[in-house]
Image (cartoon, rainbow, N blue to C red; front, side, top):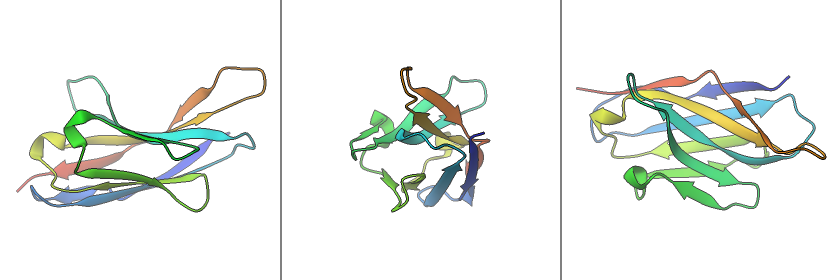
Amino acid sequence: QVQFVESGGGLVQPGGSLRLSCEASGTIYPIIAMGWYRQVPGKESEMVATVTRNGNTDYADSVKGRFTISRGNAENTVYLQMNSLKPEETAVYYCYISIRYPSSNPRNYWGQGTQGTVST
């Protein structure tokens, strides 16, 4: 059973920073991608950033230049450094992983989410 430990959310003032962490466990199969989505109340979830097993990254246009995604030395950890945060980026941030199973399409799993609030 895939499990997640997410941390790093909290309250920060506009222009401030948060660093999210995610550690996944419970799989013996390769994790081919990890990343973060966010959910603003009343809106659809949005891909924030993703990093593949070989290090390729992708970001939402709205966060490019401000957010940085990275993987830890252990391939089951991922971080998201968020700088210059804006109030409209208040959201629940969800970690996800994509696992490649033998003879099957990759399958995504989601963490429980961590709240990030940008407010004065």
